Image (cartoon, rainbow, N blue to C red; front, top):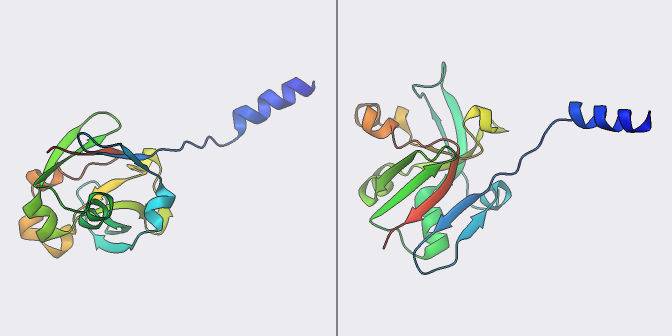
Length: 153
């Protein structure tokens, strides 16, 4: 009976998964960051409407430019973002500097679950630049379930 209670408890307990963000550059060790690591960095918030949402949401995260500068000391000409499902998108330096996308870890003050496009989601401030950013090109760069940022040299 004891074992049955243990098995039942494991089945109904909420499952917690820890996903990390890998940052890699050729010929250097891969940096592995947790949500807690990003929470220790300077936070930026964007309240924006996105095509996948029914209402504007407030995203909290770290500017991609800040993350790259803190990890590598520079912002490269191009980075590749890769999702848990291996979807990938390239982002150019000019877009990183001009629009300051963030690697979001909170949506509306709550951690993002994988089922809600988290735990990391690259967010552009679309509502601040609707004419420039509300198109397929930039939508395709807003990688959700982000698992890796790759810098090619």
